[in-house]
Length: 400
Image (cartoon, rainbow, N blue to C red; front, side, top):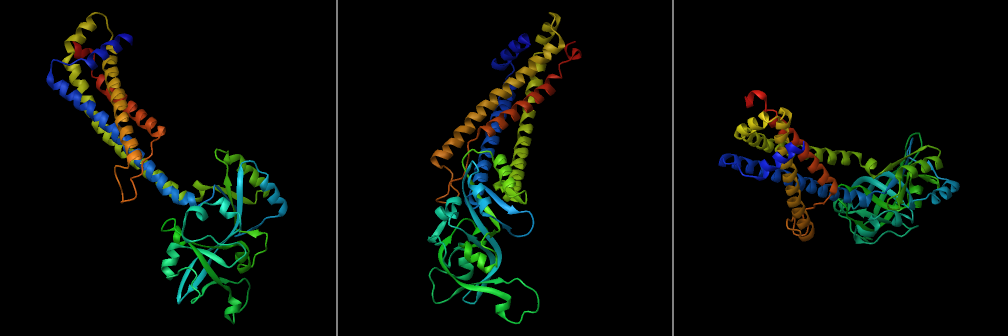
């Protein structure tokens, strides 16, 4: 192998007497470099778009969320809350109640979620801190609500509008014939004090109110909730905490992290990432046909040299390894150069925002060693495979 490697390096870094072979080898090298650079830049862009897309749900969703396995609500006793506070790794938790209800304002109506939250919600979720578009967050134990920007637009609803009441209608529990509106709905007048803005979908999803008000409208007990949202300390083991939470609630709940809460979104982003990777890998495969052609041309050009080496006692396997190693080295070096150029492009975009989507929004990119590893391994595997295909042309029949 040392003999084959020595000859391969000589062939790689020395020019051939045939200028056509030099040109073909140069084109193959440029193809590997550009392919590696393009694949890395595209993966970095999709990593940036992935983080950008998830940033909206990450601001809105908790690290962990406890939901009932059956039904829409579950009981939380004082003993369970005490155990919950003692779980190592939990920063804070918030009890919430969610239900789809009817909102009415100035002749317009909207069916969406009423979400009751307790005072700890501001410690658990970022929406109350960074996503308030106008106004302020609600005050506990009041009729104040925070609405989404989309709901505000659909209902033409502003803040502190005392001329037109903002009403909520919640279907009442029970059986039998309904004879009046009072028997059909629990209703009350709400006071919008804030508007949040996260994304188009989320801005039309929730109206936030105080937990006790939501429990009263939904006819729930004070210790009855729809879910518990939890904020974790950085770098904690979610699996261990999930096991502890299941023990606290006697395995009658299901605990989901952000990926599980947004399974469809994560699946879509992962599918897009894999599709782009496969497309650009196909481009690299096409570019590596140049490498195969260059190596075959090199084999034909060095035919007399190979015959001499064979007559001096070299095995056919050693002669094949020369071109296998030459092509592999060219792929590795080209991949490294391409990654260097790609890294420079990505870091320049991160630092100086060279390409903008809008006047205020730069194209998101993320430098990741994971992407470096993926691109390098892809180039090496495909380069070795292409070199093996070309080197298999070295046979005893060719030399004879």
